[in-house]
Amino acid sequence: NKNNKLSIEIYFNDVLNARSVKTNKILINKKPLPQDTRFYFSKNAKILKFYINNTHKNFDICILGLKSFDNKKLKVLELNNLSSNTFYKINKETKEWQKY
Image 1: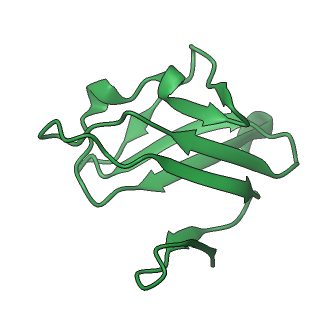
Image 2: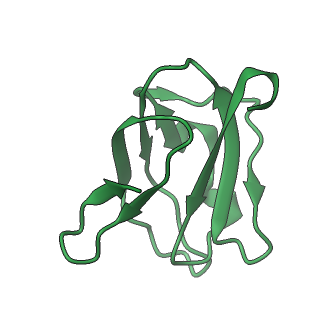
């Protein structure tokens, strides 16, 4: 939480195509990220990290149109009512996001 920013890290099963990651494909509370947002990738390109302004409130995130390294379109990711300092994971049985 440096300079009133909130770090967002998203772990993917597939290797990401970094060129498919654009600010207009990641929405926070239905608004695209600022154009000057910088994206960071893990060495294996399965983790995407970026920073948003910390509003100290819960927020929604929607990620659409990203592609895997072999250019397969990834499923739309939509998470609602997220809070800082929390970890969310998909439950393999119910296919629903759960807070851990």
